[in-house]
Image (cartoon, rainbow, N blue to C red; front, side, top):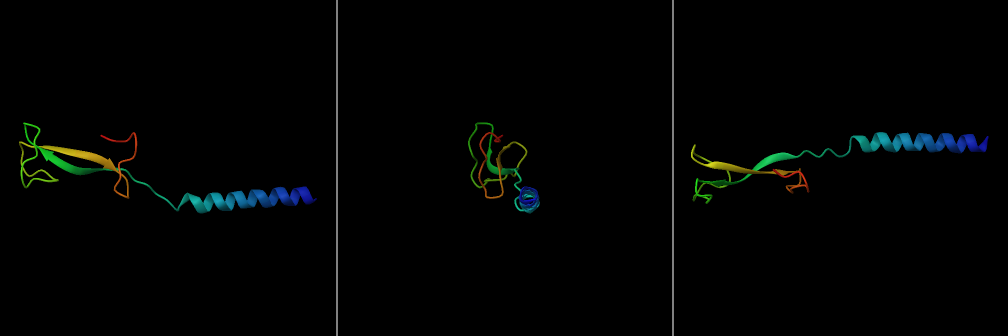
Length: 75
C-alpha cells in the first residue's frame, strides 16, 4: 500500500511540474534588420539598420527575445 501511494504521489508531482513548465517560456526567433548594404557591399551613411531605397540589400539576423542570435539558427 505504501508503494502504491508513493508511486501515485510521484506521478501526480511529475504531471504538475510538466503542466507548470509548459506555459512558462516561449522563445521566438525572428529576423531582425542589422545593416543595409549597397552594390559595393558597403553600408551607406544614414541607412542603418533598415534600408531606405531599392538599390540596397537588407541584411538580417535571426534573434531570440533577448536580442541574441541562437547558435545554428542564423540567416
